[in-house]
Length: 142
Image (cartoon, rainbow, N blue to C red; front, side):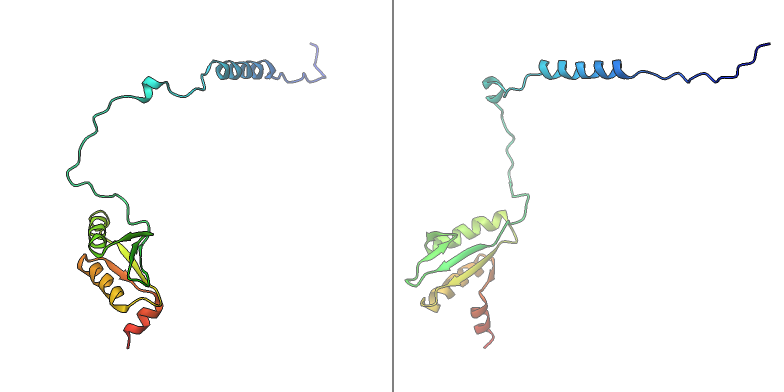
């Protein structure tokens, strides 16, 4: 009985052909795919969107609205000149969307305090939280 003195090499699997096939499939699918925008007919689909009775914003107010009172008595709401009645209307409309609406009232150093007080009173009538600059807030303590 013959004895084997040498151990046979272990067989291994050659992965090179499988890797080649995978690369060829990737190239095939890349070339076969259309990278284009949707056609005009796909973009212009007529949809009847549902109507909501009480549509309110889903998010909180992104930032506080800024009200500036200029020296001559002009009122500016976010860089837009408005009257006192328009200010109340705009804040009331914004309050329906954001319940926790807040405003910052800033008065010019040479403006009349009466104009600033009217703006603050208008904000309070609409039930909007008013933040005042530090100097005015310090005056309220005395």
